Image (cartoon, rainbow, N blue to C red; front, side, top):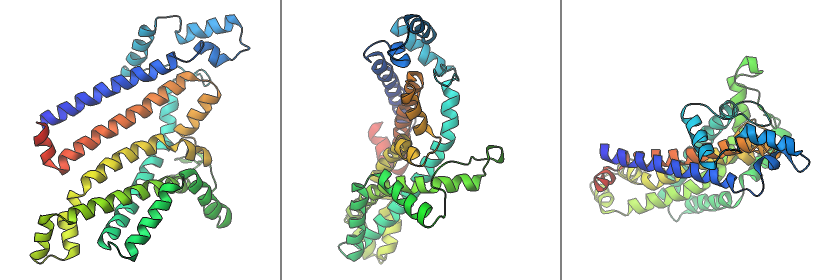
Length: 320
């Protein structure tokens, strides 16, 4: 197990290093001078030169890259051009909305998908199976921002159960409470979860059906176990490997994919920060947010690899 984790961790670090190089290089390859892009065409040469010095653009690219990475490793980040604050503080503040939203959406996704996938597999080729597959196909085809607008129309406009947008905050000092904050995140989380649950339900159904055809499951049934007992004791765990794969990728997609939904519901999360940074031509914030999202994807894949080894010990032995 130790060798397996060491190899996976080395891959994690190497992938993160390559991602940082790519993120930095993409902004370096932008046409024109970055300071001119930020200030616009009407900027004076003096203003451009001052911003170049502030951003360190007058130094060699390799030195700027090492300063950027070294600063993050030491817990320091550059100051945002438009906000005047360190990007780490801006990102940390917005993650207080985005991370709970992604976790809530993932929890809804897992509950809906595994429940529907197991139900469809246990009712294979019957009405329940056909209904779940038809609904999941619709969920895959419809984008989450459409679900977001539909949920606002039904629950906020027509029924008026919740607010159509905005975020009250987590504490009384911010003007809200944990209950109010979770209520504000419920519809955005549901709009994200419906699409992801549709995908995961299909994967769960296929994985369960494949395992149910294995010899050891038929042997368990022949020994007297009911279909439900065989499903919970023998099938579910062995069917979890492909489900874990998709779940890990989905959580990374939920964190990175909240951008559109956060703007639909006017939530002050990472998505709003990226849109505002792009509008303000704040490339410092854009670079750090993109690097953070890339790191989330790499980290989630590392966690999924570790969970693989826990669920299926054969993967550890094969990698040793």
